[in-house]
Amino acid sequence: KNSTIYFNIGNCYIKTGNRGQAIVNYLRAKALSPRDSEINSNLNYALKKTIDKQYLDTENNIFLKVFFWYNFLNLEESIILFLLFWSLLWIAIISKKLLNNEAIKVAILSFSFLTVILGATLSIKIYEYNNPKAVVIAKESEVKTENNTTSLTLFKVNNGSILKINDKMDNWIKVELSNEKRGWIQKSSIEEI
Image (tube, helix red, strand yellow):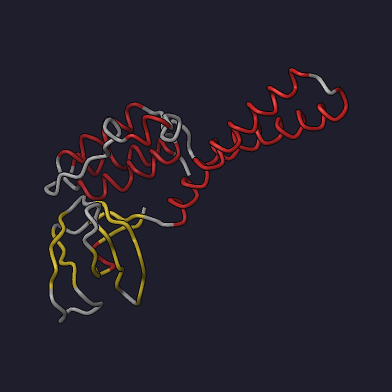
C-alpha cells in the first residue's frame, strides 16, 4: 500500500470528473499518510464538489481539538507510540521497585496518564478500522428499507457521499449517513475504503 499511488489515482479520477472514486483514493492515501497536506487539500476539494456536501469537519470537532494527534498519526504510528509509552511505564515501575526514587513516581504517573490517553485514542482508531466506510461511486443511488429492489426508497445518495457500513447481505450493504439515516444500498453503487 502506497499513499502516493492512491493520491495519483485520486488525481486522475478528479480530473475526469469522477469525484466518488477520487474520494475513495484520497481517503486511502490519507489513511497511510495523514500529515500530507496535498492529500488533505485534494480530499477537501473533492468533498466540496460533491452534491451532498459532506465535509471532514476537523475545525469544529471538540474531540479532534483535545486529541489533536488523532488525525496526525496513522494506525501503525499510533500502535508504535502506545507501545513505546506502555514500555516506558513498565520500565519506570520496575525502576521504582529497584531504586525507590521520587522522580520515578512522577515518571510513573506521567507515563500512566499518557498510556491511558494513547490507548483510548488507539482503541477508537482500531474501532474505525474494523468498522469500514464506503463512498458512493454511482452518479446517484437509492437507499432502500430492505435489501431488495422492490422495497421502499428511503432517500437517495449522490456520487462522493461517505457512508458507514453496518451490515452486508448478498449484493446489498446496510449503510448509515453521518446524520444517522440508515438503509440498504446495492453493493455495485459503492466502494469500500
